[in-house]
Figure (cartoon, chains in turn blue, cyan):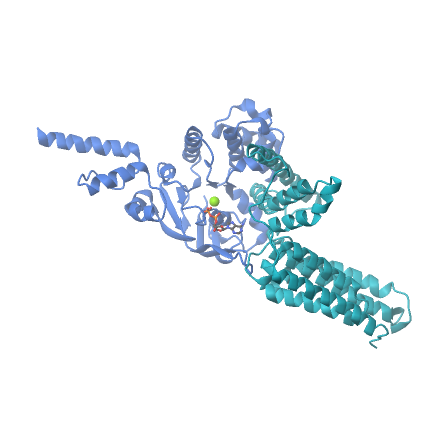
Length: 289
Length: 272
Ligand SMILES: Nc1ncnc2c1ncn2[C@@H]1O[C@H](COP(=O)(O)OP(=O)(O)O)[C@@H](O)[C@H]1O
Ligand SMILES: [Mg+2]
């Protein structure tokens, strides 16, 4: 299982032009194998730039990236292997579909890995199951599917490479609420099933807090904090000031606390909130008896 | 990389060159090109060179940017220079073994090099200092007389505006799709020629699909806003010319006249 580690990572776009822009600044993080990390930050905070370093699509302006303690840029020839190890699903991945059947498009990655027919078939089938599409779709043209289905085909295209780390850049952007829930729970199930490291990028705290065990909060090209989800929510006030939304339920409980009803802290899922409220009411009930 | 393509890119600014009326800027640029090509002797190129350098300094566009737009034409310059040097008949002034180089060949080569470099530098300056929208507005306005013979000037200008507007978008998108396919192990920068050609297909198909889709959406959006072509259409930003434009064009003409004067004065010049 792969561990990703960065060391003083910097990246600047358009060096030497009037549009020069430092997109990530001095990033030092380590991503533990098997974790499900949520990467959040407002638009333009550098999330997409950061993740494109993890599979060697962008070469850092300065600093290093290690995968399993190997500097990925030490030997340029190995970059392609890094890309098979760290799978990246871009934002709006349905735009990368180019084959005339779902099977062929999903098989593109495994084929590039040089696998044999049998293995490719196996992987494509597995990937399609992982994204919850029926196998009858294999022979259909991806261009005639619905938006959400296309998105899932594109995600399957990366899952089929069976990377040790799967990164998804805003996988639910532009989907309706139901599509969003479907995609998130697919990813959650995939993580549970494969025990891979999964990195989930989003600009919405509401969505990601439910799924990630660790959060990396980016602000103005830098890491604001990188910690367990619970601990990050201790800073919910500051996160709100950064212009990020915290979940509605967190806002409700922060407000309650301000008004003197202290039920609990760092609440970010409705289920947990329900449990605490019931406990609280139970206690209150006992007292009043 | 694709991102390094700078031709046709606009660098916003407030310099005098930026603020000139784009119609005049186009005429000035055309005159400048004539300046370069009307020069018959090396000294006659000097006005054009001084003209371009002055404009460049006034525009506050960094020299390095112009250098960047010149980079792709270096092979072309080298190639034409070699052809010029060896394929020119005349009295040889230099002899190295069987290689003979004529005086005329040297003169022509030097002039071609200067012409090509300054041609690219000057025209890049026009696109660096004028937004694509202004440029097409100016072209439409300059070609307006052709409307009399039913030439679709407006439609042509609109097509150009849209094309220019979407160049950066399409470059960005190409970059994105390329990265997405690379992430799936496509051999775009490495791999054999056949593999690369195959990888191009994986980029071109998605690019076409989205371009066609975008064109449809854009047409629909334009129709929704009642776009019906030229008829009865007014502009929010009218092109306006003023004293600075008149002065600029008079100066340009003076430079052009100077070229002809120099041509005459140095008509018998032999440098060595
Ligand atoms: N290809 C690019 N060229 C120039 N600047 C870019 C490019 N991609 C992103 N940027 C800039 O880098 C910054 C970070 O962008 P990005 O990593 O896409 O942020 P996020 O994914 O968090 O929205 C932004 O200010 C953006 O404008
Ligand atoms: Mg992004």
